[in-house]
Picture 1: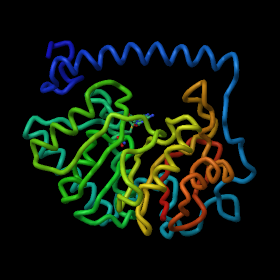
Picture 2 (picture 1 turned 30 degrees about the vertical axis):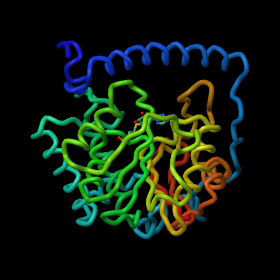
Picture 3 (picture 1 turned 90 degrees about the vertical axis):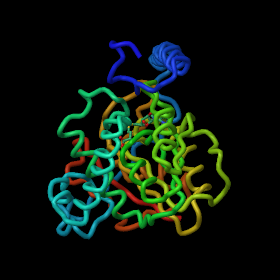
Picture 4 (picture 1 turned 180 degrees about the horizontal axis):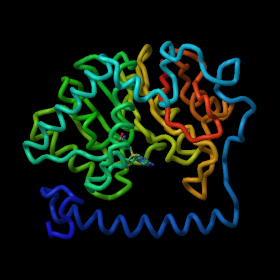
Length: 308
Ligand SMILES: C[S@@+](CC[C@H](N)C(=O)[O-])C[C@H]1O[C@@H](n2cnc3c(N)ncnc32)[C@H](O)[C@@H]1O
């Protein structure tokens, strides 16, 4: 790999796969611009309208005892990370990072790239919270079958694989930097049962009904269009076994405009969240039924859990 691409792509990426990624990047950039142009003419399509209530408790403000809540915003990130049970999970994931680095194997920063500047102190802390919180309340056990959406090459998934889990990952490698290839390469080198599939979320999943014990998706569903998200949730409900859990982190996204052709991302609205996420899955909210978003005008990261 040329110097220019050092730190951007894994050094062990085959040249023909590198060429494929470069071509796909060009095509995707063109398709996005074309989609935006079309959306400017038609306006947002297929969006679940905003609902009435926010996901806040009765007093419309702080929740008296946030510790009881597993479905919640990350505004308590610092105190959560200070808890010994959460810290232990963070440490275990960090150990995997150290082990991979010692072997010159790559894992991604939070925005799914290998670019060193993407590893900021805040983004790493945020990701540590998401991973540890979702894992802590997932009921996941070593040796289980796990599906992760949008987590190719994350230290989190390598950690799950190191626990003896059979990990399958669906990801479209949005940065075209080789995260699918890297997952499979690292898995092979480490002798872990982990496999990433280069597929679009929202399309039919290549797994039988009830195949997985657990599902994870960290910081992904807010990036999908409403249509893809509903399709994905339906498929997740199909491939999870009865009694299995699905753990998500997401931005609640009040008013954020990520894709001009889809603005259906404001999960802090109760009806929107139910219609766009919970109902299509056929699952139910596991843990507290109120999501906590004490400052609904702002844009919060949070975690929520579903059970089949
Ligand atoms: C913000 S990153 C989060 C990555 C990872 N889960 C983490 O915690 O660091 C979003 C991820 O979703 C994936 N992604 C985005 N849109 C997708 C789509 N339509 N289908 C499948 N994966 C997608 C990206 O490739 C990327 O890996």
